[in-house]
Image 1 (cartoon, one colour):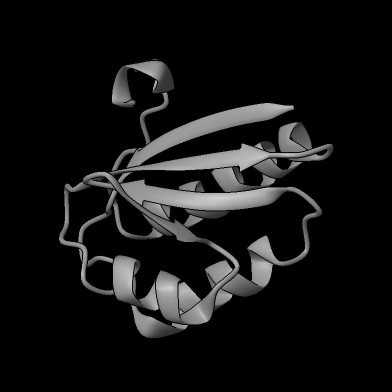
Image 2 (cartoon, helix red, strand yellow; image 1 turned 30 degrees about the horizontal axis):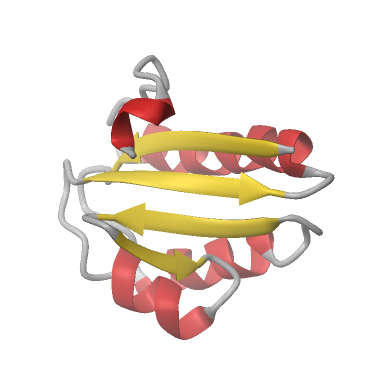
Length: 104
């Protein structure tokens, strides 16, 4: 199964620690997890790729998470909660209202 989520980088961005937590969190899923920004795709289970993408992203920049595999539906729900928690802590908004297909 394939799923896509979109989000904006919260105020304050992602710290190195939060990026590492994101990698560890994504590594618990069987499905492939990728993050796409400006036609650049990284493996969200890769420390180096995730650090290079998330820690250099600025507040308000838009990213898409692409999931593909058997547990993609479950993983998308868990990842959305993970990001929502980060964004809530940063007093920003999470918006999944725009269809992910419009990003491709």
